Length: 220
Length: 84
Image (cartoon, rainbow over all chains, first blue to last red; front, side, top):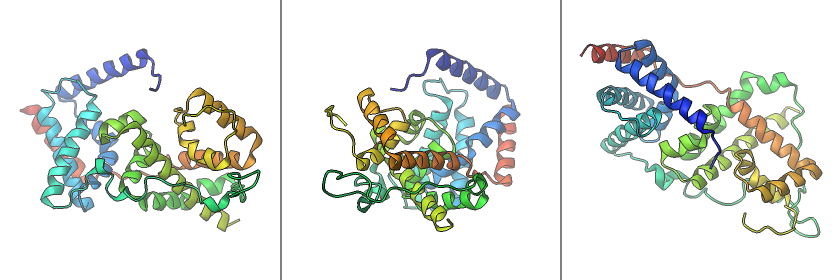
């Protein structure tokens, strides 16, 4: 369990109560801020269940209408964010079924054949002798000028690598590393065990590093 | 990892533990073995630092925003809702 101080927890609860009060009082600035803040993540999670970006966007719209519908009854037993994502997944699942293209996330759908095995090519390690398991061909450092790492082209390489991942790995790395969610939040929203979440993240990061390495070594 | 023997970690094992290390979920003994390995192994040090760079660069990937139309529709829905 991560050690989060109870002071921080308490602060988050107070913030959330305040946010709820503002929303209920009709503060549209606060509502739109929430829409903008959660929008990208909601879209990404919706895309796990439905085929097109357009339908995902409809699912997000429906989700917000569901949120408005339920806001007065929301009791704060889960965090607001978790509650909103639960409405999203329910809405998305219904839509996915209607489109007959539901992906059961908990079954790890398309990742079924990619849950185990090494994330670094075993050929890069020595196979026998005193140094078995140690690097035969160690990674070469990215001695790149900072500017190259920061370039839009490098970001595009990362983006493409993330898009190429199986959907559950893609979602986990996007929420954790692109959007900076905590592991706990990800597990709540996607209903994953701690181990599952970490395995998905581990495999995803290793592949994105590999893509970045291929790209950076090519130019050096 | 459950066994707490005196064997040092291999590089092949270290690369599979980087996520647990960075997420802070390695138990203290494994963490110590992991860090001890890094000190003597430039290859693994490089690997870990590349994973860190990957994470930090991923944080700068541009987000995928809602369309302007969708946003306007939500604002209208909120106004209706708060008037009701």
